[in-house]
Image (cartoon, rainbow, N blue to C red; front, side, top):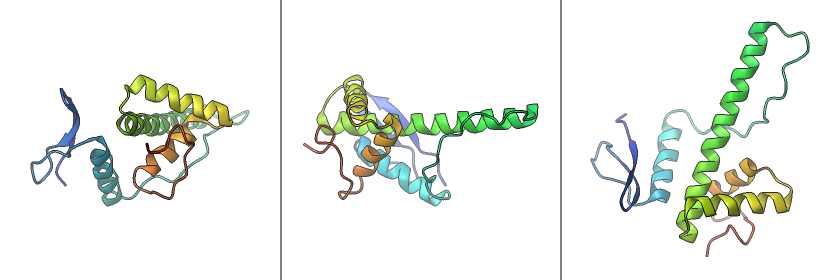
Length: 139
């Protein structure tokens, strides 16, 4: 598989460098392309519960393995939140910082985790059946 490159241009985010040499026209198309590439590489990761604390009396190796699992979960959650920010920024033509504030505010007002609501936002970019709060949905 050819390497795809995500880069920022003066006109927005672009994905290019693939086998056909063409860029994806916008961030939503880039996310769809990333999803397709992920599915070719073994499919998306299922939603997982965040690992809690390491068990009492765990060996140093077990604690380090647990820490790695926590870091991997945090990294995956961050990626999903960043994707959701991109979807909201594109959907509502707003700066990324404002998109994050809207996502965070919506999550807080509903008692949800930002990462969980972010997953729904990302899913809504490809699935019209995903229900979002009014302030996050399509215009």
